[in-house]
Image (cartoon, rainbow, N blue to C red):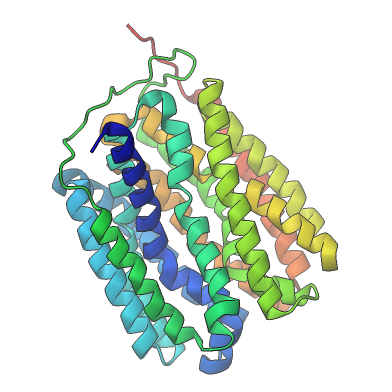
Length: 391
């Protein structure tokens, strides 16, 4: 297998690892209206269940990142997929109330803790530093691909057949991932730093990584609102449940495109990623406020823009870490990933409570404020990150 085909396979593998690992929680969000009728809980219950998954993943992320550094990314992917497939099956067959669903999502969150550190290290080891921003933008297609498939499952499976078959069908992704894991790749084969002096960054210490994780945590509130509540928000804005699933599908496709485009532009102009994240989050803040004031087709037109901006930054976030801390990509990226998970864990509870207590409009304004704060935090980290001379 030549190097280009091997790289394409590795990128595709990275996307599907994250997609399969997050299907348990995003199928819940997409099928919320059907699942809530079956099991009897509201938007706050959805928030609690989503929080159970992501908060657990947040707690597990750093120790799992260190474990991946020891056992290797290939073995970690096998463990991750075995766990993800098992959880999809158990949720589809055994989740009969809020408590059982929550327990299974907690276990699925622990399993998900392996996913990002494993694929981040694999890509750090085998991707040319000059193309890392694009590759990590493509890699972070995993989450929107998960919401895309979950959104597609609404009109094709969940509404007419039921939500449990959707979980069983998702197990097929696990099988595909296991078939794609390469067995012939060596360890680190790329340089630690980029040869482009515009983007070479000295290793970021824990303080900056934690601050960057804070920015990721704040920005992730947008991901929560879009990935978990979009179908319900679309129904509130005047659309049918099936149309809400289509909007989730279209928005996820825009998020996919935005991540790749942001990565390409960053590589093309030698960026370090921080400015791109701040810009996307800042624009996203404005879009969420506009969504709070919109209904009908105006709302529908804003949804793809919200996905592209408010949820177009994760690839650049990982790139900023790997660009600076290539040799410890699994452990370092697990710190910022923990911030993402904590935001994805706390956000659903608050957003769900805001929806139940006030409205989606109030929830969207709060999400916009969080995105604006994230823009400022990441901009500050970018000013603190030191460049490094290339000899």
